[in-house]
Image (cartoon, rainbow, N blue to C red):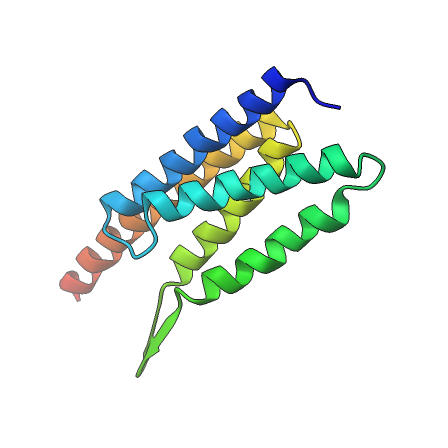
Length: 140
């Protein structure tokens, strides 16, 4: 059984991590922003905490179902329009934030911190890549 302070720390960290990723998406005006990422991260953390509390011998099946279920949520953000596919990064960020919530719920703080930093870097790198690609196209 987890101590109440440990539970609160994990939930507060989920709020912080989900908010960081969500704020980045909100700042760049993507469909799924702050509230969506925050709720997915908190929800995954809560479900993981509950599965650890109720099934301490084997919490894995419930936590594994989170990733599958969130895949359906992310799929709703993907749109195909003629030759363009939009929303793949948003879907991936929702899925990754669910994984982050599971990681926090399990108490793997170092992994969660590294994962949050990696996600933020990846999302920021996408904009750098876009700028570089756009400039290169002008040079042709």
